[in-house]
Image (cartoon, rainbow over all chains, first blue to last red; front, side, top):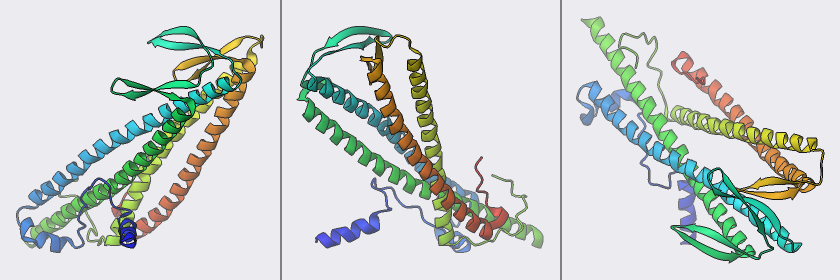
Length: 190
Length: 132
């Protein structure tokens, strides 16, 4: 069973995680155009391809914004890690330090932070939890790892999506060229 | 799209599945390359800011004052010496990641060059692989 699973992941490696359908590849345009569903005018076929292309483009747009979100999230987490490391250092030498912290946009306040072994992490949804420095550090590192892993998935999906978009674009260009040639042939015989 | 009267001298060049894969790969690498370039630019900007900050610190005459040093959203007051060592640390981290990105860029570039020669050899003027 375990072995089966591994084979599957091996072959699915380049596939998408989000279940993006794979674009079909047109091997021979003549054969493709001779299919019963493509019997109508060439414009209709191209329109159908274009429709699918715009679906892919829409998915690409969504994934790109997801990627941007993750990319901005990671530095934030890393900054929090920096801060906790700083707090740990201060705790080790048992001395407080002066800070100027953001009170609201453009307004900073002076504050002295005594040595501390606790820190509150913002959980989102108006929830904040208190952690010891080490626990907070562990949690943040875990979050960074998760974010990086998700970023990897999204990037893989984007690569996959790009493949499908390129395939569709090439398909459209080839059907179009095929049509141009066909028209020229008709013109030449008439 | 070009008008139907456009001249396609030899437009029946057959695209095989392998060719398609190569084109796909090329497009994929091209996109990754763009990402890399963006990231590189950001990091280089950041590095420049850090260097400017370090220069400013050098110019301070009074070494006993505390300088506010930004960590996340909070300025932490540090001694000049502390601030300098923190700057140095961030600078070397940044340089490291810039180097990694540059390496990735150049390996992408060489793969893209290989694909480019193969594709141009097959399709000639029917394909355009130049960046805009």
